[in-house]
Image (cartoon, rainbow, N blue to C red; front, side, top):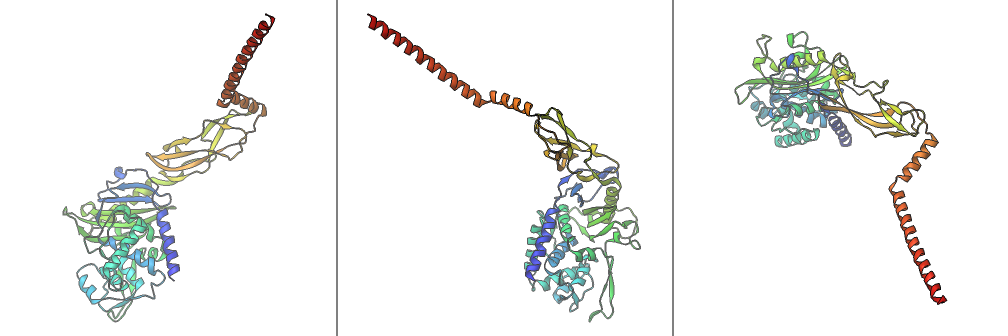
Length: 449
């Protein structure tokens, strides 16, 4: 079992590592909506392109979103035992969380680990989070938070610190970018996708509850019947913190981390500390983080689409060819269309292209040979690099090749050195010859006298 869990963890961590965004294109939604959240991070998960960010690495109080890290630790170690693992709520935990948001799990009540997950994710139950952590850690809550922090770092977070399992403690801090990473990690677990995407769950009857009862999600975006203007059919799941957080500035805020899919495109929305005042829907209960998530979701799906940034059927540039009598240039084609997020209705002219090419190519060239690369940028940020391939085969002309090689030889440094040494040798020989002739003539003259 331990080996299986280790493999699962490794695979999930790999998914999280691969999910790190490759580029931020810097789109601005202010023409549609001015985001008031303290931190925001919106990523297209199909391309890993960040379409919007605001103070994404600024640390803020995590509040109820802390439970996502508790859920991550549970699923990493117990995803195969959610129904067989039973949790009995300790009296000490019931007393500790009294008066805070709960799933109504009472002291001495025993429920499955899966039911505890529903309690944490749907109704922000502090009792479910703290009770589960207390039991699974063997009454060592300090050790539990140490595991939370260790896993958080493995996932890739850099600005988060976890001090309890539920978020009651004000020492829990995170960033919009870190919450994106944690949610993306959790999306690799089927149990999380199902639980966080549910609007309602029936808690079973037991010794403390004579009858079963229902808990409902704080994420009104999931329910067409109960969500009102917050409802968005594209939302698949996530976690909201709607208890209200009083910041040092005296502003009450709320947060939401969720993901949505529509028309074959998916996004993660990490919205932290939206002020109550931004919600103008007029309901008695304000949900500003849901309000702002909805505004950004509408903006994203209305204004952007995954489109090819390159056309593999059309040449993108040409390069000089040497040693050929057939063609002086060679057309190069992109090897991939590099699908990315682009403004709806736009074409590949909105991107900037940077080429990495040799000064020329030398025949023979085979069709499909990689000649260089092109790097595409959007709004100044790199979105990808693609190989450039030869559009046709070009044969070598042997005469041109031979002439070029002879020219190259005669202009080479080697030839110059050989020529200089040869001339030097000839000069030395001439000096020796003239001197020898002079001495020979002189000796003959002496003999005659």
